[in-house]
Image (cartoon, rainbow, N blue to C red):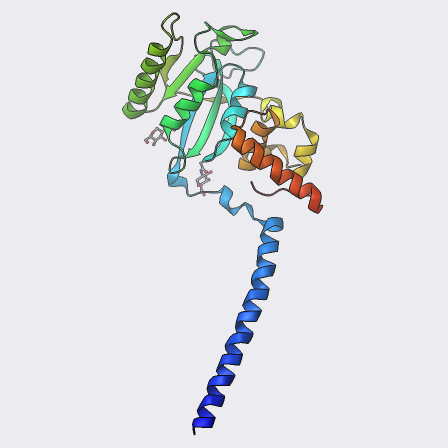
Length: 252
Ligand SMILES: *[C@@H]1O[C@H](CO)[C@@H](O)[C@H](O)[C@H]1NC(C)=O
Ligand SMILES: *[C@@H]1O[C@H](CO)[C@@H](O)[C@H](O)[C@H]1NC(C)=O
């Protein structure tokens, strides 16, 4: 009996060992595969956690690149906002400002954090322009939806104003109104100048490119406007892909 019991437990032990070996082998395989086929499922977060913010801070090509990089931002679109002209276009945008619409997951990045990025990414003391881009269309605006966002925007503007005693902060704070998307050639402008990066994400058709979180991020990377840490992470990821010869980048 004792012998029988110990042989049963021995065979159990062997079976368990086999299972562990198989699991370990599978695990090894699993570790390799995700790098190739990480799916874009993560690109469609639960709707309820998504919020929309709009900012104007000079050329919208640059603005889109600034916000597209940030973790928690799921989609960026350039367009026209802040004016009254119906259906503005690039060559006739009327009283609108070049703007970027940012869809973000508020569990990952807050409106307050977006405001910090806004302030640190342009010269809000320059009247109606940014560097060589001069004119009403390049003015600085925070669009707010509701009293809480308005309160945060006003407080952050006051903070910036106390920092720059000699010149006044020109930034306007306006209620979030209609946002008109710009023409396709202005969307992901920086990324489109880098065919290699476009190829790396599989030459997405225009509509997908405009909606893609990955494209928004790479657009910022292409303009070298990501925070240094993110810029380096993407560099490393791209180098890894080139080294391994896997042609498609599916996630960052
Ligand atoms: C929310 O979900 C609906 C239905 O699935 C979809 O049509 C819509 O585009 C989603 N909105 C965002 C902001 O992702
Ligand atoms: C403004 O906020 C309300 C309430 O949070 C929301 O339902 C609405 O969709 C927001 N508007 C825009 C344009 O994001």
